[in-house]
Image (cartoon, rainbow, N blue to C red):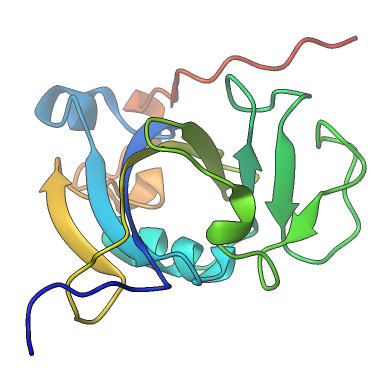
Length: 183
C-alpha cells in the first residue's frame, strides 16, 4: 500500500520568511522576498527545525539561536522562548526560557494553522525569520523529512563580507523587527 496513510506524527508545512538581517541594498533589490517552505514531522525537536532552516538558507557557520512562540512580533515579552541550554545574557527579553530546543518538539508548541512564530539566528548579526504554519497534515505522504518544497529568493550571504562586492561600507542593515518595549 502506497500513498497517504493515517499517521501519529503529522507533517507541518512551515513557511519561513527572512524578515531582518544584515543584507545589502543590492541583495534586497534582487531579492525583495526571501522565504523557504519546509515540511517537518511533529515529533521533530526544535533543534531539528533549526537545522532544516540553517540548511534551507545556505548557512555555513553555526551560531546561537532561539524560537519565540506566542508573541505578536520578535522580542515580544509575552512570547514563550526556546533556545540552547545556557545562561541567558542581559540582552534577552526574559531571563528564563520556557524550554530547550533539544527537548521541545514541534508538537509541544501547540501550533495551529495560520499561526506565526519567530526564529532568531546569530545574536550578533540578528537574522530574524517569521515562521507561519501553513498546514498540518494528519495524513501525510511517506518520505524523508525535513523536506524543502519551495524556495523564493536567493540565499543571503551569512556575512556581508561574503557578498561579491565585499564592501561592508555600502551595506545597510535591513531590520524590519521592532524592538520590544523597554518597561
